[in-house]
Length: 104
Image (cartoon, one colour):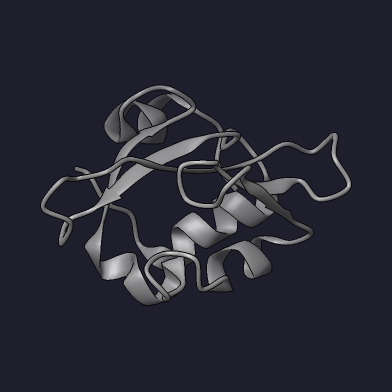
């Protein structure tokens, strides 16, 4: 397993439970470049995108804003979700994350 249903992922990201860092790539990217997004509740804008996607990274107030931002080759993560391959969440493989971590 290397993908999740978009609505399920959105619920987890919005809920902020066990999802402080997600690493993924797009299957239609021949170089399979890693991308990073996450959630850090201690910040005013807790949803973030790593500096590999945006110079100096960026932050958002909501999960909706992050997933709708057109920052992945001019498209949002929601628009490109069918091509997302998740490498890890919380630093572990997707299969272990779904089995051993709390979810909402």
